[in-house]
Image 1 (tube, helix red, strand yellow):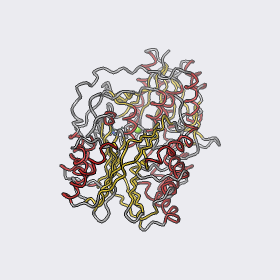
Image 2 (cartoon, protein in one colour):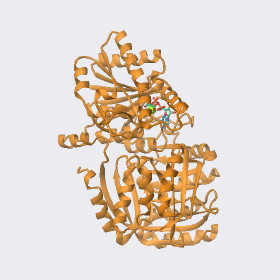
Image 3 (cartoon, helix red, strand yellow):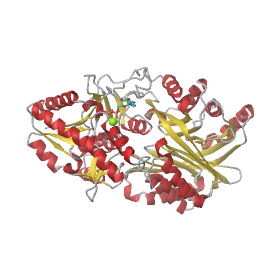
Image 4 (tube, protein in one colour):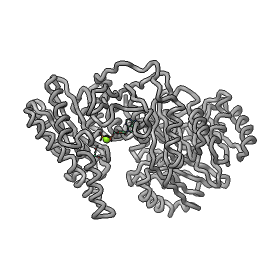
Length: 593
Ligand code: ADP
Ligand code: ASP
Ligand code: MG
């Protein structure tokens, strides 16, 4: 018998009428012959109401008590849902996270799932019940109630689908599918019939709130197809699966994080171990750092900039202060009114010129880019909050995301593809649940590193610099632009070693034109990459990398991070030792697929 997990978000259970309508959906699925597990969020904006209550009694509520409070929202919904189903004449049982046996670590308000019991749920299903699970919650080893982070009911749903070996996981929400960008922000966003796990993972982490990013990690790891659809209409919705919508389009979606903060440490020592000192302190607070940009200045000192969510700025600055005792930065600056605009697409990895195009489009819209960070399947730029909306609109138009690609599928199947049939591997993955899993560690020796100093910080400059190189047919890989200081910025990127001289010459020319500083480079550079799932949300990955490289005495020239990959650029002769160091550091989590 097939099993379906149906998840209903806050708006889908906002009032009693909607609860009854969700109950009917589950009963219908059961009558069609499926076993049904429902995962339910708190009603409407109830979680926000609870957060607000907490803030009225305390400026700094203890995280444990926050979880105690927030978990009650879901408890109300599951009980009402069970009553509604009972009143409609079917059998249902509601369960809290603890009653199911969703075990998590003890990181209150951001807990990760360690394991899930299946026996009670299976028994209840076999007895003909619809099982209604409270989303977003679990318990730790001391029986403390934990929550999985805002939006975490998606993760409960996909995790249950994984352990119960469900055939599909339906996410019922207030939009009728996944769009090329948030349709509430940009009305000309287009609903896509299908999107790849990796793309959704990036988009979710870069601001597309339609799915909790960790739910997509689960789905990818266990091959669970996610079907996002409307609670209120019968539109077919979107499938999140292995393959993208189009094989020809380089960009599949755009996302915006309106409220970001940028922090810069100026004038810190350029030595192995420095990034570690800083980021291990931030990671210890479970804060996700993004857009790490590091530049070496002339006097051998380094500047490091990075972004964090605006609401985590305060805690991050505390961590920076601790690290500063050792790093002794000449200056620490921050800007809490920046936004991150990103484009994502699997096709980007093979189609050149995407970054170029993005900078061009932004330049035409007269938008100044404060920082750039690219990786294989995403490009992010940091802009001022007041430019953010226009920037999103410009890239959405520029990549024609509102136009349906010719090879877009007309029909999509939601049948689960069980990609791993070896029971040992399935068991291994189940045991690991949300643990870190690394697929691959690679060394690419064919890279060169180029750097242009003191590029005037004004709209269109990044486009001009990179275009000078790209127009010579040179394939640019990792691109980093730091935050402008004294109205100037540094732009670094990598290109194939064979193109180094050509790129250097092109840069010297453009530097003349735009009045930038000198061009520098390292012909013999190497790229070390660690790829896996959810690397950025596992805040310890960067730390492990920096630790391994610094204990091997290796200095990192450039860093770029994404959800599925972390790249560092080092000197060529440190490539081999770097690879060895990373392999040793990640041995325990390297998947033997
Ligand atoms: P739920 O309460 O059902 O979990 P959420 O509010 O968490 O619903 O997620 C749905 C919302 O996600 C939509 O209302 C939409 O504004 C937002 N969203 C952001 N990015 C996207 C996107 N790319 N596609 C669809 N919706 C998006
Ligand atoms: N109720 C929780 C929240 O609002 C979890 C969820 O809805 O996914 O964040
Ligand atoms: Mg949600």
